[in-house]
Every structure is written in structure tokens, then in C-alpha cells.
Amino acid sequence: MRDVSISGFIQETPGVLRRHLDPATVVEAEGSFTPSSVDEREEETIVVASGPGLEFPLRFENRDDAIVYTQASEDGPFARMETRIEFDRENEGTRVTIHSSVELAAPIPFGDRIATWKRRRELSRMLEAVTRDLE
Image (cartoon, rainbow, N blue to C red):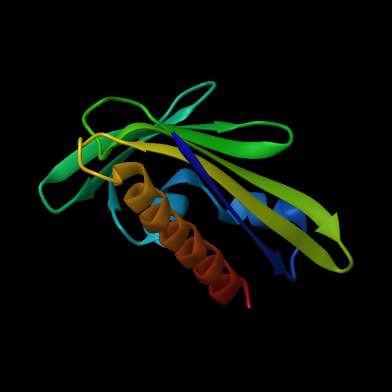
């Protein structure tokens, strides 16, 4: 399992960001998959992410200090994936830090490095999209 973290400043309050980043928006903003269904439950939200020839569930939990989501089955691109989006008040906005741990499902050489590289790009696209949406 490998880790990747990115961080960016957004000129909005943590509350505004948390409301904007509903589970379907997160999946869409990452840019690799689209949300095909959303099942809101008491403690979690399940989003089915769809892409070319692939469909898998992501489990989202809203915690006091972060939004946390994991790949909820073995049918996805990862053997394991967990991502945590944290919001820290900074100056007149928010420092958004995203940590993700991934392990690629496919047994290929350097697979986890490739997964980390791809994951870093998805997280960067998410920060860029959120910044653009809230400007």
C-alpha cells in the first residue's frame, strides 16, 4: 500500500467546502469515473462509480474532522483504497489536505507506484475543480 497527499488553499470557509463536496461531486471532480447511483444511508453514502468497463462502490462517511471514503468492494481498480479530505481554517479561507492510500488490484510490476501516480492526478483534478466551481 502506498500513500499520496496533496494540499491546496481555497478562498471559502470549511462549511461551504463540506457542503459543496457531496459524494457524487467528489467522484465527478476526480475525473476518472462518473457517479451512476447514490444511496444515502444513516451513517454513510454509497456512490457507484462507473467508467469504461468498470463499475464499483465507494463508501463515504462524513466525520467531524474530515470526509473519508473507501473502495467498498474488491470489484474496483484497487485492492484497497482509502481517502481522507481534511479542512483547516487558514487566513480568509481553508487549507484542504487530501490523503489517499492505495494498493492496485492488478499484479503488475510497479503497480502501486502507478496507482499512486494516477491517484495524485485525480486528487489534483478534484482540488482544481472545486477551486474553479467556487470562484
